[in-house]
Length: 273
Ligand SMILES: [Zn+2]
Ligand SMILES: [Zn+2]
Image 1 (cartoon, rainbow, N blue to C red):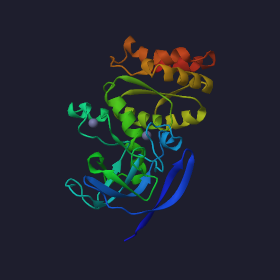
Image 2: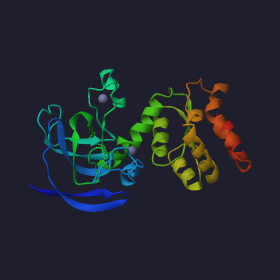
Image 3: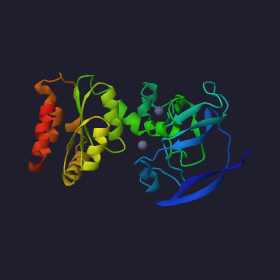
């Protein structure tokens, strides 16, 4: 058995290092995973740039990791060696804080966060809390499954809690999250409009089978700044009756932002509704 493995760690803000680390056995309630794929998420920048409070170095980023369980620690009864699993940003709850005791573990006050409080998936192996693992179906390739562990769950949860089939949703930005959101929304039966900032995104949105409306990049950026102050409140999808006037608030916000050169797009949008 190997005694070391390769990892890419951040040794100081903005400093990546390829290192060789000793293989460790998982502790109680943990498993060691042989990483097959790990997505790159923008939140990894918090590790790279040193932005996350309490972050200490060296730290291996990566919270979209998929791999095979190589060893299980004491007390782990629900997982077996050889299973393919994934671990995301939420790496486990403490089980003792007020939020946990209310059953709201996602709001744990002292969570394990993969790639931030513990080493993540930019490595040949990682140790994860068994209670935070997701089983990966055989038919899903590791590299396809990995982005679902953060970008996927983020967009899926937003849509799951936003409405029901037949409602209209607008997805702003067809990037790492948006391109997944568009696909989920479509499969979930939403009337889906993709809003992006260029012909390349239009091509992708069309490929994903969605109506697309473009917004000039500068407006997208301005919009993004505004959203930072008022987090997406105007864009939040609402539960509405399809094809009624109530559909419009979801998109009216965007439609109002479309500049005169996008009038054609605006009318296409209205027609779509
Ligand atoms: Zn992420
Ligand atoms: Zn907690």
